[in-house]
Image (cartoon, rainbow, N blue to C red; front, side, top):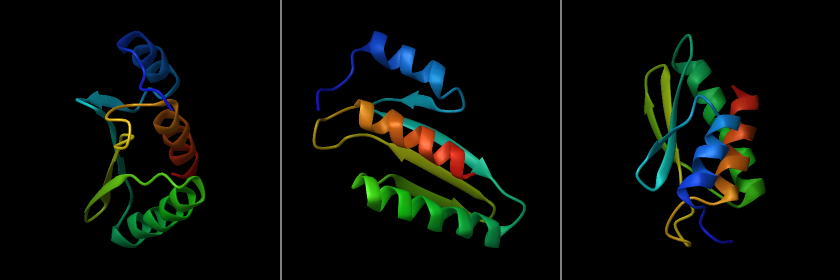
Length: 92
């Protein structure tokens, strides 16, 4: 899957407005009422990621979960990242 151009990335970010580009990643921090809810979200994320066979970097800080997506095998952002970002948004 080819990496996206900067114009394509800008266009894709319009469909994922809570995500921001950070170098070759797109990132978003989700906030929950407590640690238990954050961990339940991480479990849902893990299941979706495994199904897609595309895994985010996950950073958990009590009630906050930061996700970073990039297609490492392609060296940047692809449609795969934005598709999964939209799935993750629907799971929060």
